[in-house]
Length: 433
Image 1 (cartoon, rainbow, N blue to C red):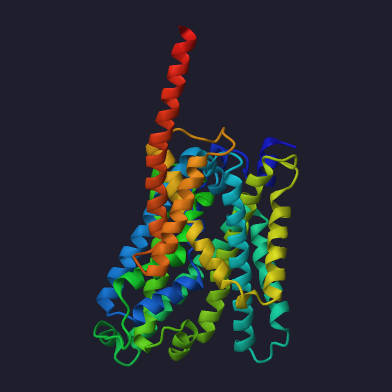
Image 2: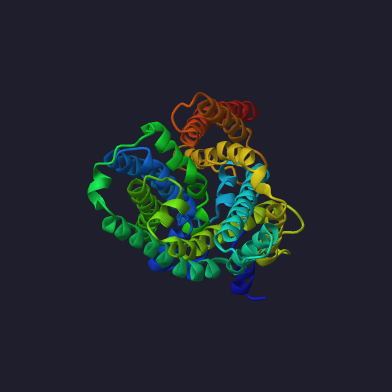
């Protein structure tokens, strides 16, 4: 098998993406935008919009998405420079075997999100079309099977669906905004809106950042295909402006105009139920195939340290992940999964802080070590800090986790790595004497 064919079968899971396979700015931007173009962002925007005045909602959206873009740019730059996926980047902090723990959690998180969205969309189909006779369990399996078609084809599959999904989401957003302008009261009512049940800036910002910080954490899987720093910066900013900020802003306008933060009911109030349903098909597809793709790369990171390295192709792992998600969805995981997602939301974001701390401050990659205990301890500290933040309702738990993990890693590395270096120097002096 040729080198190019091998890389295609395994999606460059074990090595850097070569220059010959880097993508154009247009391709990079569309695929990056396809991931955050999700119904959840429209819903998050609606929740923020209905709970705040227009000016405060706009400020909150800008601040929240600014934080997300900063995470994407920082981790995306490392992926572009090294050509490595999120899971393999984590080796630089955790070590070869240590990174497997993160990869396992990443795969579990992806499976839960895929199955959850399969369950939710199946329920939406069932409630929207009275003639739909298939049970929710079978419908969920069919939905996940559809999303898998692009995921098993790697980056090329993501690209094809993103070129369909991104315009669909933009059309839905634009039509929604136009409908708001044409509604009774128009934009005047939006600008003068006073929420009945206001929410705080902290709570609103937390929902924006917390709702998509997992997605921002694994964007290196796509950013590694960038050709230049310029393409990375432009692509990331444009993609998240469209996918996160754009959809959330449209959701906020629709919610304020109708006084309803529920996506389905708000769009129905504007007479846009059919448009919303069609667009939601692509919104879910472009997000969930990315989840399948990222989970496959995470599993390859685990297999790299076993005899199965290079023996299991990307498409086979993607099918296994989708199959597992389909089983969970068929058994109604919607009723049990929320505590799992909340738990994972506290542990996965801090990994970005560890990677950033290693790459920009410590600069002593641990990828050749088996386990870096400093990273594991820093991760544990960050997880505890995130949990305290969540329970005490202080600031944004994922951001608390990222900052805590980064600072803990830098401080502990400076202390113990310097100590180890001094011990080695003393030993060397004794030997020379």
